[in-house]
Picture (tube, rainbow, N blue to C red):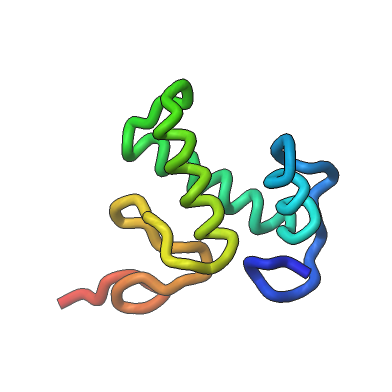
Amino acid sequence: MCRKYGRDLPGLDAPPLPGAAGQDIFENVSAKAWREWQHLQTMLINEHHLSMIDPKARQYLSEQRAKYLANEDYDRPAGYVPEGSEGPGGPEGPEER
């Protein structure tokens, strides 16, 4: 059962990270949720100009990953609307005035 979506979805083929965190994701997160996290992670890296050689940046992403996959409040890039969510004015976008 996917932790993010609360239902059975296809899982990953292998742990995406080494160690206990990777094993937990492998056992409890769907491939769909992991792909979505990777997309969000890329946006966070770009928006915040993160360097993956910086331990603080890696820690920040680890915290955001845990929050995202647990459906907790996580940082979103400016203007980010999760897939399947309606933006301002509904699914067609902002209302014209």
